[in-house]
Length: 115
Image 1: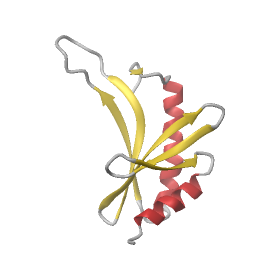
Image 2 (image 1 turned 90 degrees about the vertical axis):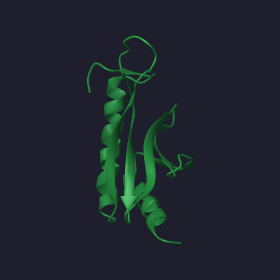
Image 3 (image 1 turned 120 degrees about the vertical axis):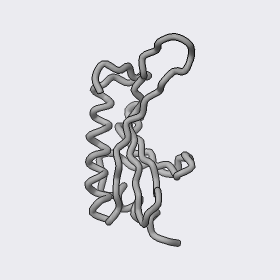
């Protein structure tokens, strides 16, 4: 996905986010969940030709045949990278340090368990 513009995010940073999501994917799979990396594009629908815009990558996490959470990596100034965990309706509910994907995977697996 080269040569696409990022809204405020260089391609190198997007690649770092993909790697962080890949690390988390390995950890959630060890808990019996399935992670699916998702590349998002914004396609303007105005008249004329517009180039698609690459949006930050996400990962959908599935378990028990249903979507459990969606995870995005966000960068906090002077705070490093964090996994932002969102419910299936898009509401952010948790944040975990991207430096510790194992603890983030444990928290996500706990959400997959029936109440």
